[in-house]
Length: 93
Image 1 (cartoon, rainbow, N blue to C red):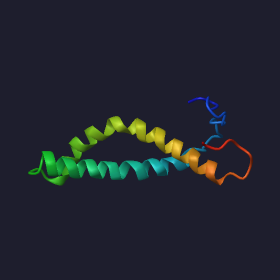
Image 2: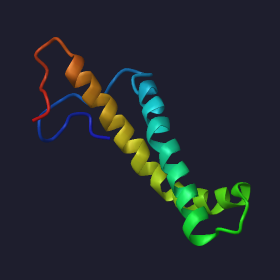
Image 3: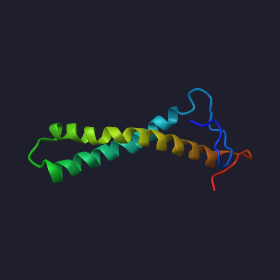
Image 4: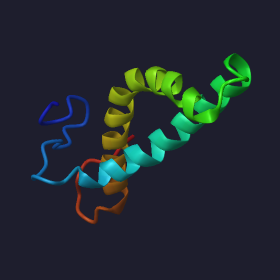
């Protein structure tokens, strides 16, 4: 991860533990996505399988998306901080 944003100059390197809140956001992003994948696979691809067996193919489809969820949860966390800052730090366009 870059220490400073190349576009706006925002300091992205934070103190240890800063991105712990982004874990909550990744959970908020990931669980509904996994639920939608499970529902779609069960309804469209494997309607005769029980739900606990449909979870396995849904997880296989979900796993390649984890890095994207990780990245965008961190981005969303930084955006939440931008909108709550009181100092003169660069703000998103």
